[in-house]
Amino acid sequence: MKLSALTFGLALAGLSHTALSAQAVDEHTYANLNDVISTHLHLDLDVDFADKQLEGFVEHTLAWQNKQARTLVLDTRDLEIDKVMYQGSNGKWYPASFTLAKRDDVKGAKLTIRFKQQAKKARIYYNSLPQASGLQWLTPEQTASKSHPFMYSQSQAIHARSWIPVQDTPAMRVTYSARVNTPKDVRAVMSADNSGALIKDGDYWFDMPQAIPPYLIAIGAGNLEYKEMSHQTAIFAEPQILDASVAEFNDTQAMIDKTNAMYGEYAWGRYDLLMLPPSFPFGGMENPRLSFITPTVVAGDKSLVNLIAHELAHSWSGNLVTNATWEDLWLNEGFTSYVENRIMEEVFGRERAVMEQALDSARLRTVVEELPAPDTRLNLRLNGRDPDDAFSTVPYTKGQLFLIYLEEKFGRKVFDAFVKGYFDAYAFKSLTTAEFVQYIEKHLINKHPGIVSMDKVNEWIHQPGLPADAPNPTSDAFDKVDAATKAWLAGNSTLEAIPTTSWTVHEWLHFINNLPRDLAQDKMAALDQAFGLTNSTNAELAFAWFMLAVGNGYDAIYPALDKHLSGIGRRKLIVRLYKSLVANGKRDWAYEVYQKARPGYHPLAQGTIDAIFAN
Image 1 (cartoon, helix red, strand yellow):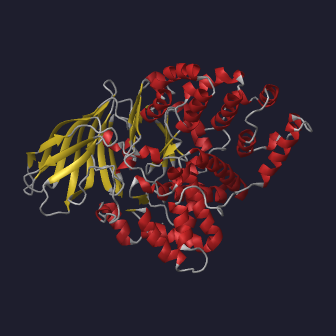
Image 2: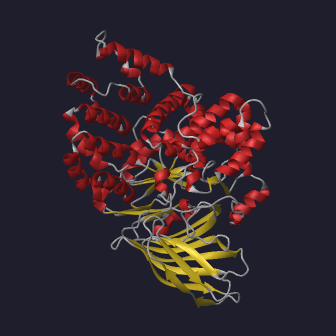
Image 3: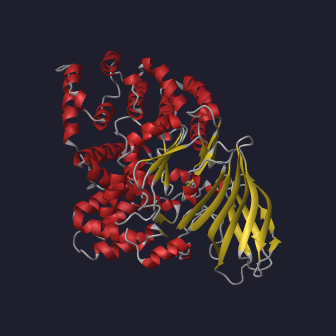
């Protein structure tokens, strides 16, 4: 976006985060933000693959909010703290006393540091532990290259504290710099300016001049090569997947250009992608300047590149304008899902965008029936639960449908101006749902009276389920798929007569997802023989087919399903399969596969699936 000189200057100086949301109460942090705020972090870390730990120090530059305060409280989880030093007003360094409290299962261990005077800087010497929830360590055998180890972080939601002692809340923002040491044949990258990582020498320097919430601090290290896609975009990846990734995602620059035109200039300089090993538990992570991406979306036909559009969209919604607490997650993900779909429409056309809307909407309506009603509200109440529990289809797709609803009511021209103004007003800031409600009332509802009431806005945000008048996107292409499916199921047509050769992946997904859940074995076998679904190389299609087959008792899938579950760790593509296997009498088989696959899964995936087998 076109940021004001003052806003952009504050962002670069790391000062905008001192304007904390007055309404933010983040139950998931110990940080005493009313007393003191970290304005800049400097990390000096060694990557120790042998012991699976990061070791070194973090230096906090401090802005004191309370003149009487002499204490800094940080979030940690599974960190060993060696010592703490602080810089006094005379520039000299002194030892500080500290206390590391007992570990809480959700929040980790509270680190309390006491100073004899208000410190300018505090330096904490520490190391992470192998079980750090925000890091995954992979042996060479678990990587694509089979020659080098790999390590990467996943700090969202509150996992930054497992590898950095930090004020781990999205209510504040911080700039950072880093020096990272690795073996000489391993390249390190971060969510920062990576120009210092282009020469592989084991000694890397990074700088992140824009203030970001701590969950966006990210690191990766492995056998990474580098290839540009455009003047503004490039890919870091293991050599085995580099060229295929470049070919798959070379529309990224077009996505940036289209989004610039809709919502204002991209504010982060470069936009590069880091391709991670298959164990990465998410589709992508929007770490600024360097989105982390799963290889499961390298389908060979650009059919799954909406994931790139989603992570790019976070550069405006989420990274630039951030939810102040994890109960406000929909402010990140709902807006991002909406912007993602607008990008897809601009780059790939309206028909594809609507098909993606329809698929997501259908999935949401299923999830709304499965989840407890309180968890289907946009403004969620976690009540002490782990903020990872906030991540479901609800903040993403219900949030998107809310914005589509507003667009339909006010018209795209009016709504685009509102969204652009919202991004500008809160650039490099964090806000709560309550603050958003105040903003939308003033700048959209009252500005254009008689169109949408505040009662309707509050229904969308605070009530469970979907409003009766919620958009229900449909696609003409899907209507044709449904007609062909109906004719085949009724015996009035053959599989060969269905025009699948022209189908997109979205039509295939709609076809599989809408087949009867009690399909006869002969029809399952006929589908598999005609279309080779069991051996699909598209991870999304394979998942949809496996879900249908497990529920229908089609046993021919199991060798391929074993390979699927053992080969990838993306939670979207494995968790529901494990649940379905357990529910359909295949618990023992699933548990055997899981025990084999578990060492290659990320800690976040391990925790989720452990719970399935614990019940």
